[in-house]
Image 1: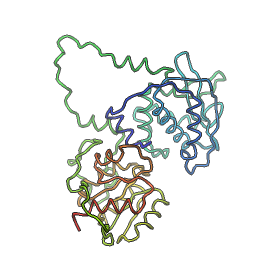
Image 2 (image 1 turned 120 degrees about the horizontal axis):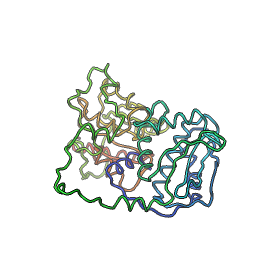
Image 3 (image 1 turned 135 degrees about the vertical axis):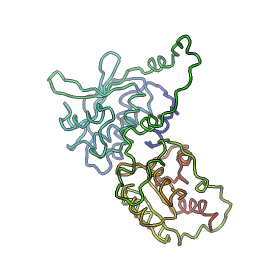
Length: 379
């Protein structure tokens, strides 16, 4: 799953809930199969907590599975033990409970405090305090909401405090209820649409967005506040960075005069790129947008390659918008890369403002094809 695309579609209501009967054993099997990828470099073992193996419910299977994966990532990040325990069991007559925690019987005090800070505060905890991206937290909260769930802390019979995410056994009734149109009060049939509110629109998309000026106040060329625009997932693509169909054949572009900034937090990806693109005049690397800022100020780059999921406070979409507002970078080609690709992702990333999109792993041929299309009019 690509978090940027998923969150963008949900925010723009470009999604459809498709309820189907799901067995909790299917969810567990998928989670178990994906656990190695989800846990990454963390040395954490997957274990079973309280499981009602006969539990079945109606929900959107893909979105629910994505949510479980994201919750597992969060639990792994907050975990101080060697195991995490996945639980799923019947709640009251019309609900069931899932949780991912660090103890079999009840969650530890430290993890519970972190979870409450993330899910109970109105804007959510500052993600950097827990090593979890803002986008992940926003996407989890959004998925919980559209799947009609809620975060709940409760006291067990042994008086130990625990938590769970509570969901309806059958989501279809709630969906149908939402579809029912409420009657329009008499005299309001022709009410005017709500006036646009730029501040509100920004907060809806990125509730805890910190303007870049606050992060680089010591830099010589801060972005003037009056030039800031509302956060909007889809922006017009500058004509100078749009990719036109290639009419060139034969040899690809000579890249020996080009310089590149690659914003990527995986060292192995950096090494692979450096080896495959060694003909470039110069390549500089940054693991986060924050690390990239001094490089952008002190060097000139002909193009930028950027991973979507980055370390630090800013993801690739945040960085894209800011870079295109910086002096001398309004029209720079920026190529998005990510390991998680769904059908139509390329078109969606280009629609957000990227010049091109390449799936990982980056192979030389794919990158050369992209550069050939981008620079063919300038050579």
